[in-house]
Each structure stands twice: as structure tokens, then as C-alpha cells.
Amino acid sequence: MGPPFRFPEDLITLQAAWQQTYAELAQAPAGTTALRRRLITLSGALCTHPYWAASADWRTGGVELRRAAHTSAPADKEAAA
Image (cartoon, rainbow, N blue to C red; front, side, top):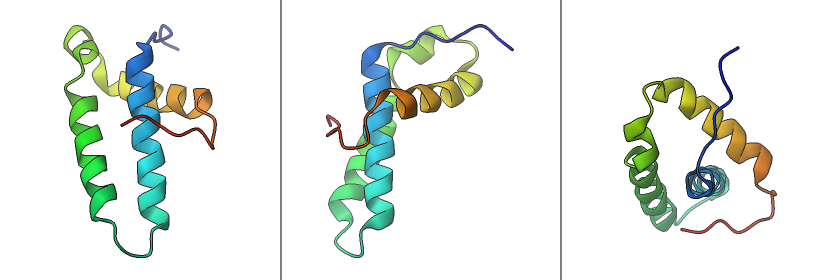
């Protein structure tokens, strides 16, 4: 097992917002344009976050980030855009 990752709080918040938006999009029967746009915006913000510029192991870090966002965000918490 590798070293534990320490992610900036804003990066975890972005990932939690992405996951929440993705879940909402999966449940939306129609009118998903706003959710799709939000998901694209959040994806761009996640991919270009300064944390990844300093990290050489971004693939493993991405998996750990999703885990951290999933465990740290309450299910009913409104994620910031």
C-alpha cells in the first residue's frame, strides 16, 4: 500500500460536487442541459487543479480523491459549484 494522499480541501469539495452532479444527472428524466454543463465545468476544474501539477502519481491520486470525497461529504450536503 502506498503513502496516504493529502488533498487540499477545495479539491475534495470539487470532487464531491462532481459526484453529486453526476448522481443527479443519472436520476434526471429530462432537462439535463444545466447538469451536463455543470459536470463539464467541474471536470475542467478538477483536471486543471494546481494539486495535479505537483503530483507525479495522478492516476492513483484520482482514485484516492474519489474515495476521500465519497467518505467526507454527507449525502444531503449541497455541493458548491
